[in-house]
Image (cartoon, rainbow, N blue to C red; front, side, top):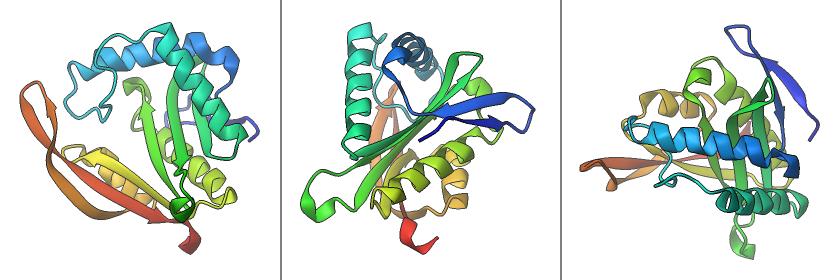
Length: 187
Protein backbone atom coordinates (compact mmCIF):
# COMPACT_ATOMS: atom_id res chain seq x y z
CA UNK A 1 0.00 0.00 0.00
CA UNK A 2 1.48 3.32 -1.06
CA UNK A 3 1.35 6.39 1.14
CA UNK A 4 -1.52 8.76 0.42
CA UNK A 5 -2.22 12.26 1.69
CA UNK A 6 -5.72 13.01 2.96
CA UNK A 7 -7.19 16.45 3.69
CA UNK A 8 -9.49 16.50 6.70
CA UNK A 9 -12.71 18.54 6.62
CA UNK A 10 -10.98 21.23 8.67
CA UNK A 11 -8.08 21.50 6.21
CA UNK A 12 -5.34 19.51 7.95
CA UNK A 13 -3.25 17.15 5.85
CA UNK A 14 -2.76 13.62 7.15
CA UNK A 15 -0.64 10.94 5.53
CA UNK A 16 -2.15 7.44 5.42
CA UNK A 17 0.26 4.52 5.15
CA UNK A 18 1.04 1.13 6.72
CA UNK A 19 2.97 0.99 9.96
CA UNK A 20 6.74 0.59 9.59
CA UNK A 21 9.51 -0.57 11.93
CA UNK A 22 10.66 3.04 12.25
CA UNK A 23 7.27 4.03 13.78
CA UNK A 24 7.95 2.64 17.25
CA UNK A 25 8.50 6.02 18.92
CA UNK A 26 5.34 7.53 17.37
CA UNK A 27 3.33 4.42 18.18
CA UNK A 28 4.52 4.49 21.80
CA UNK A 29 3.45 8.13 22.28
CA UNK A 30 0.15 7.49 20.46
CA UNK A 31 -0.73 4.45 22.61
CA UNK A 32 0.00 6.27 25.84
CA UNK A 33 -2.17 9.24 24.84
CA UNK A 34 -5.01 6.77 24.33
CA UNK A 35 -4.28 5.12 27.69
CA UNK A 36 -4.60 8.56 29.33
CA UNK A 37 -7.84 9.34 27.49
CA UNK A 38 -9.34 5.99 28.41
CA UNK A 39 -9.36 7.09 32.06
CA UNK A 40 -11.68 10.02 31.32
CA UNK A 41 -13.65 9.01 28.19
CA UNK A 42 -16.14 6.23 28.92
CA UNK A 43 -16.94 5.83 25.20
CA UNK A 44 -13.37 5.27 24.05
CA UNK A 45 -13.65 1.79 22.58
CA UNK A 46 -10.17 0.70 23.54
CA UNK A 47 -10.41 -2.18 26.01
CA UNK A 48 -6.67 -2.73 26.22
CA UNK A 49 -4.32 -0.05 27.55
CA UNK A 50 -5.16 -0.76 31.19
CA UNK A 51 -1.95 0.93 32.17
CA UNK A 52 0.77 3.01 30.59
CA UNK A 53 2.14 1.08 27.61
CA UNK A 54 5.75 -0.03 27.50
CA UNK A 55 8.08 0.25 24.52
CA UNK A 56 8.34 -3.54 24.59
CA UNK A 57 4.57 -4.06 24.33
CA UNK A 58 4.35 -1.57 21.47
CA UNK A 59 7.29 -3.25 19.71
CA UNK A 60 5.41 -6.57 19.95
CA UNK A 61 2.27 -4.96 18.48
CA UNK A 62 4.30 -3.34 15.71
CA UNK A 63 6.12 -6.58 14.88
CA UNK A 64 2.84 -8.52 14.75
CA UNK A 65 1.16 -5.90 12.56
CA UNK A 66 4.06 -5.81 10.09
CA UNK A 67 4.23 -9.63 10.03
CA UNK A 68 0.48 -9.85 9.34
CA UNK A 69 0.82 -7.42 6.43
CA UNK A 70 3.78 -9.31 4.95
CA UNK A 71 2.00 -12.66 5.17
CA UNK A 72 -1.27 -11.24 3.80
CA UNK A 73 -3.03 -11.86 7.11
CA UNK A 74 -3.84 -8.23 7.77
CA UNK A 75 -3.78 -4.65 6.60
CA UNK A 76 -2.50 -1.57 8.35
CA UNK A 77 -3.59 2.02 7.79
CA UNK A 78 -1.83 4.43 10.12
CA UNK A 79 -2.39 8.20 10.03
CA UNK A 80 0.40 10.72 10.56
CA UNK A 81 0.21 14.50 10.83
CA UNK A 82 3.47 16.41 11.00
CA UNK A 83 5.33 13.21 11.79
CA UNK A 84 3.03 12.46 14.74
CA UNK A 85 0.82 9.37 14.73
CA UNK A 86 -2.83 10.43 15.07
CA UNK A 87 -4.73 7.29 14.07
CA UNK A 88 -4.48 3.57 13.49
CA UNK A 89 -6.81 1.21 11.67
CA UNK A 90 -6.30 -2.42 10.86
CA UNK A 91 -8.12 -5.45 9.59
CA UNK A 92 -6.80 -8.76 10.84
CA UNK A 93 -7.71 -11.86 8.86
CA UNK A 94 -8.87 -14.87 10.84
CA UNK A 95 -6.34 -17.71 10.71
CA UNK A 96 -8.34 -20.92 10.33
CA UNK A 97 -9.23 -22.17 6.84
CA UNK A 98 -12.99 -22.15 7.37
CA UNK A 99 -13.01 -18.45 8.33
CA UNK A 100 -10.07 -17.01 6.34
CA UNK A 101 -12.53 -14.98 4.29
CA UNK A 102 -13.33 -12.98 7.45
CA UNK A 103 -11.47 -10.37 9.41
CA UNK A 104 -11.86 -8.02 12.35
CA UNK A 105 -11.57 -4.26 12.12
CA UNK A 106 -10.05 -2.08 14.78
CA UNK A 107 -9.66 1.68 14.65
CA UNK A 108 -8.61 4.38 17.06
CA UNK A 109 -7.98 8.06 16.45
CA UNK A 110 -6.68 10.76 18.79
CA UNK A 111 -9.49 13.00 20.03
CA UNK A 112 -8.29 16.10 18.16
CA UNK A 113 -8.60 14.24 14.84
CA UNK A 114 -12.09 12.78 15.36
CA UNK A 115 -15.10 14.11 13.50
CA UNK A 116 -13.11 15.47 10.53
CA UNK A 117 -13.47 12.57 8.07
CA UNK A 118 -10.27 10.76 8.99
CA UNK A 119 -12.00 7.65 10.35
CA UNK A 120 -14.02 7.24 7.16
CA UNK A 121 -10.89 7.60 5.00
CA UNK A 122 -8.96 5.09 7.10
CA UNK A 123 -11.78 2.53 7.16
CA UNK A 124 -12.42 2.88 3.43
CA UNK A 125 -8.74 2.23 2.71
CA UNK A 126 -8.50 -0.67 5.18
CA UNK A 127 -11.59 -2.38 3.74
CA UNK A 128 -10.32 -1.94 0.18
CA UNK A 129 -6.97 -3.49 1.12
CA UNK A 130 -8.69 -6.33 3.01
CA UNK A 131 -10.86 -7.08 0.00
CA UNK A 132 -7.73 -7.34 -2.16
CA UNK A 133 -6.50 -10.06 0.23
CA UNK A 134 -9.67 -12.08 -0.30
CA UNK A 135 -11.37 -10.96 2.92
CA UNK A 136 -15.00 -10.28 2.13
CA UNK A 137 -16.64 -10.25 5.57
CA UNK A 138 -15.38 -7.88 8.26
CA UNK A 139 -16.62 -7.72 11.84
CA UNK A 140 -16.17 -5.26 14.68
CA UNK A 141 -17.35 -4.53 18.20
CA UNK A 142 -18.31 -1.04 19.36
CA UNK A 143 -19.55 0.33 22.67
CA UNK A 144 -23.33 0.79 22.57
CA UNK A 145 -22.84 4.30 24.00
CA UNK A 146 -20.53 5.41 21.16
CA UNK A 147 -23.16 6.86 18.83
CA UNK A 148 -20.65 8.68 16.61
CA UNK A 149 -18.69 5.49 15.86
CA UNK A 150 -21.84 3.45 15.29
CA UNK A 151 -23.13 6.05 12.81
CA UNK A 152 -19.80 6.00 10.95
CA UNK A 153 -19.82 2.21 10.76
CA UNK A 154 -23.39 2.21 9.40
CA UNK A 155 -22.34 4.81 6.81
CA UNK A 156 -19.47 2.49 5.79
CA UNK A 157 -21.88 -0.41 5.22
CA UNK A 158 -21.72 -2.19 8.57
CA UNK A 159 -24.88 -3.72 10.00
CA UNK A 160 -25.68 -4.66 13.55
CA UNK A 161 -25.63 -8.41 14.11
CA UNK A 162 -26.20 -8.45 17.85
CA UNK A 163 -25.10 -7.16 21.20
CA UNK A 164 -23.49 -8.53 24.32
CA UNK A 165 -25.09 -6.98 27.42
CA UNK A 166 -22.73 -5.67 30.09
CA UNK A 167 -19.61 -6.83 28.22
CA UNK A 168 -17.52 -3.85 29.30
CA UNK A 169 -17.09 -2.64 32.86
CA UNK A 170 -15.27 0.67 33.14
CA UNK A 171 -15.11 2.79 36.27
CA UNK A 172 -17.81 0.61 37.84
CA UNK A 173 -20.27 1.14 34.96
CA UNK A 174 -21.36 -1.63 32.60
CA UNK A 175 -21.74 -0.98 28.86
CA UNK A 176 -23.12 -3.24 26.15
CA UNK A 177 -20.95 -4.18 23.18
CA UNK A 178 -22.60 -4.01 19.75
CA UNK A 179 -21.42 -6.49 17.11
CA UNK A 180 -21.42 -5.26 13.50
CA UNK A 181 -20.37 -6.72 10.16
CA UNK A 182 -19.90 -5.62 6.55
CA UNK A 183 -19.86 -7.75 3.43
CA UNK A 184 -17.22 -6.37 1.11
CA UNK A 185 -18.38 -8.43 -1.86
CA UNK A 186 -21.62 -6.45 -2.17
CA UNK A 187 -20.16 -2.92 -2.35
